[in-house]
Each structure stands twice: as C-alpha cells, then as structure tokens.
Image 1 (cartoon, rainbow, N blue to C red):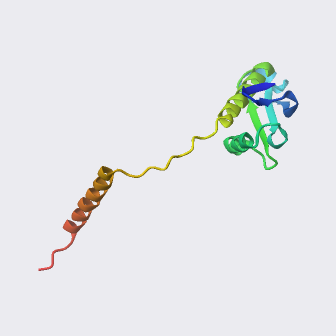
Image 2: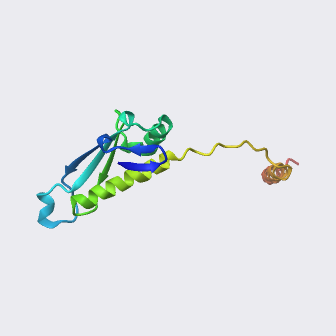
Image 3: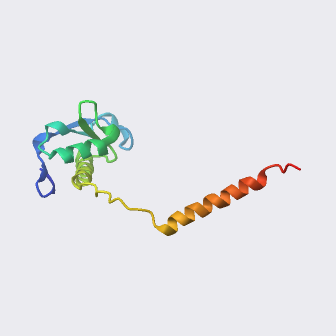
Length: 137
C-alpha cells in the first residue's frame, strides 16, 4: 500500500510489476537476468479521487498509454529490489504532486504605476522608430 495523503491510498492490487532485461551495467549478468522494472498502474481502475486521477494522468505525460495506464520504468540499479524500490518511489512522488490541488488564481488589476511604465515604454519605442524614418525636405 502506498499512502500519500489523508484518504489518498494506492493499494498493492492496483500495481502490476513486470521485470524485463535492462541495458547498462551488470557485465554478463545483464544478458541473463531481468532486473529492470516496469511498474504499471491503471489509473482509471484505482480508488483515487477523480481530481487526483486527472492530475496524475496530466503529470504522467508520455508515460501514460492511450488506455490510461501509467507506466514507470526503473533500470538504473543492478538488482530487481533496488529498481523496484526506485519505481515505487517515483510513483509515490507523482502521487504526492497529484494529491496537492493547484492554487486558484486570484484576479488582480495592474497598478497605476505599471500602466504608466508600459505607456512610457511604448512612447519611447515609437520615438525610436520615428527617428529612423527618412526626412522629407
């Protein structure tokens, strides 16, 4: 079970792990042992709240398949256990980010000084362009 925040829990039954052969360090062992981990989570089938699911799919980006399955690959270590822990940690971090809702934007108005600065800059730019023109005699 991966607990992220209060009420937001991902159960072991929602996770699917596949072990595949990895490239990289490991010598001759790398050709014999499947140490890389593919952690797969069907986001739609989980018991997560709807807002968290939507944010998780958006945060997943290219790691989400067309069926809505989040795939996290870990292959940086030489052992299955280390890669498994790394994949679960990445999933936990993604879930943490998805669990925090975005702060709503509060509409603000530009200050009088900022409006004046903008107009002054426009005036100055126009004068520069006017100075570049050919003078008709």
